[in-house]
Image (cartoon, one colour):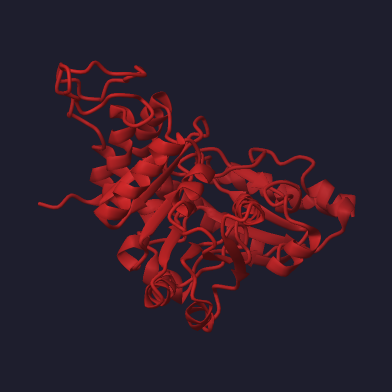
Length: 380
């Protein structure tokens, strides 16, 4: 009987120890492995190319995403960079104009090296699929919901357009995780994750993952990962697999909290816009809105500083997806590598706030948000 996604998460790596029958998988910290005999090699030879903990995590995420295989990397950016190895030299990569600042920086830097060409387009418009066909790219990078504006892109339509011109469709699924969205089932060829976020869920490990829909693509990614050495560490993989087992339980609580806090923020007089990933497209390709949202404030610099002067149970920090609530100012934090003009083009205002809502009691979250808005009023 096929297992539910939640059951797969809970049982990831459980009961598979062949040596002593340990219920949870043991940690393999060795860097190398003994060869059985001259001319013979076991399953593993050197830690960069393979490790039981890393393979267990890769298999678990690949299973959840419905892929043929995956690679665990040292970070989310390493995961994206690994996928970019599949772009031919001088090829064209199409990227959303409002993507994560680190992705923006990486792609522009690779273009400056002469590795490939990059074009940033609005992937949320009805015309986006036709624009992809006109541009004739080698790879289409999709980020939905977008970071930090939570804009939704039609994965199925964009992937189909990419395939029409022989391009790969790569989707960043960090914000929703396979608990709320499975891009491969919608037509994407590759899914990338910053496992630092919801998959690990405890803000204590940095990592990434790449999952491919086809076995051939998965093998190419594994080859490049070993060649370039971007693979994740055994202990990080062990910890991330441990965190993965509670993904659904965490997401259920965090998503409920986020929905309630988004409603509270929406009715505040100092709020201009609330960006929350729901609506008709979300109902088609997501099983829930997740635990992230952003909003714009109607205030000046003094009000912004007042708002962020005492954030209560919300930690004023980058990253997202942990059990604790986080609040971020993208213009000076996650997207500071973009120029003012580039942020303006993407729609990232200087008063935009991004929230990653955690598992705290809703009453405490309400109090913290209310206090922040009161601080804004006093500062103005």
